[in-house]
Image (cartoon, rainbow, N blue to C red; front, side, top):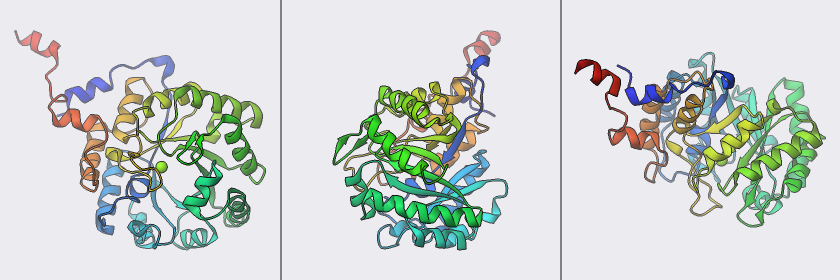
Length: 329
Ligand code: MG
């Protein structure tokens, strides 16, 4: 029987706003990459299976980076080899360089996210090279991707704030995105890596990118971390500017090794409930998504980071509707 409170999350449709929003669940990659306790390949596949069962069609499954830097994702090939079990789902993987590209393509992944930071200092700390060196690599990767008919998304980290450089201006972000767009017309994912962004920054950046680079909203995705509880407010700012693709992790897993104290991504279940409540279509079953979130939360070294599962655990999602009670009496 459907959980009544979860049904309530789906009731508040605003027909004029009813549109489809793409959720990219990045739990197996961003959610797990920073977790200290090893998660088995089998458990990752069970997690993916639960996400797929909820209706999620876009999943970032892993990352092809050197296992020395991200040991949690050292099984990228083993995970990729099993993704054929989930037909109809678009799997992507993160790559930082040409070696990652070659490994990912050899493993059968056809959608790749090339990561580069808007902040040069963060790029050096995270990827051990300058931003311009990463962009040169992007040019090389882009040529191969075109040859191989591989779809690229460029993931820009620290778009709004850098733990080393502070606030990133909209102009600085524009410069980074412009540099990549001069190399190819790949879609851009704007990431608030340490969760420091505010909605006005999101609006300012999106308006500027659309105006200066003539980007359509469909060429942009947003990736919010929820360190300070601003991710949904920032999501609303993105929605208002027309963005319809958002990353999230089940149970809000994740973090950043270079952002002490940074919590994970916005929880997928919170994001879906938020979108459902405002009348956006996600195609995701919240009950089944909560099952995935419950499973994902076992792999977190921290307390649960989202809202919806906590409310459900506390019983807030199990209430009998008032109208039904009234009918009985
Ligand atoms: Mg992230």
